[in-house]
Image 1 (spheres, rainbow, N blue to C red):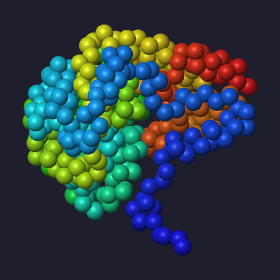
Image 2 (image 1 turned 45 degrees about the horizontal axis):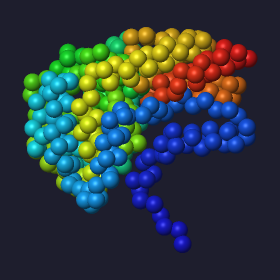
Image 3 (image 1 turned 180 degrees about the vertical axis):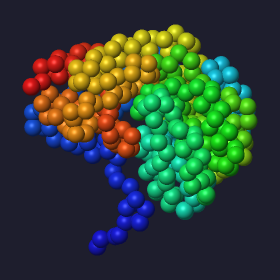
Image 4 (image 1 turned 120 degrees about the horizontal axis):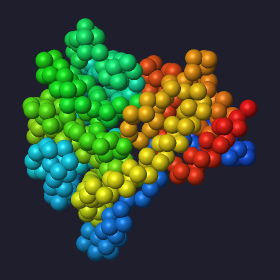
Length: 386
């Protein structure tokens, strides 16, 4: 018997990196030594004291049951203190902070909480593919708005205002931007908050990269009145090297948080308490932790820049975040064609930008989540490519 899949499944495809990993695995099995500079999964461990906290807490006999849907009070308090210390944003830990099993979970929860079938959702191009995929899964009318290289990967607000915004209920933004590495600014956030307020659009800011190669972390919620029209996602995956732990959070006004919780509380039963205690420890880390992480990423970034330049790409060296984004030479028909040639000739995989939208079709992206020795190997292979 064949059970017909739900219609919503036809609106999405398997995630690009999931499909691509099978291709790379097949090449490995055939004897190719693959270097994968694709997915941004941090390869460094969390701080020692974070791991020690997990170990100590997990040994206790009374911490292994179901946990609260809203996280332990200490975790909500830690997120609140973290936002106050680093972003200058006051959050009430009782009702303006919601711990998540990673911010990717939050994207689904937020759209399920606010989007009815046929509602409009604005997603950036280029942008994280999950915004569009989840919008499609919930039956939204998805509209892409363009980010422009010449505008430092910000939207053209005159163009935004001329779009058909009837029925648009939500807008996704992401700064520091993935995949371009473009930083946020207070002026940009002020414009977006104003846009959301005037058009009655919920602004969803995805903010997981603000500590990576970025000297001045900022939050959209620092704009006066932003909590009235915006929700911000944040994550411990990147800056705390805890991607596999699945810790994120959402912050907004109490009404928005309570609405998201209605969905979340029906989809999980909380996070292992010792992991929450370890996350509390991680959120107390000081500037020297972030400096040590960024020192390593800066060294890797130098090699990523050199790889892109060796490939004939144009690189903006002011970018930050966990990736390097570069425009390909005009001689190439597409970034995908260049990516495939590099892979087939050297075994080095570099992500083609088309997967992030039409504005990424002439770009390549390198993840900084590999050791310096791996970057050196990749660079040597590409320099010797024939």
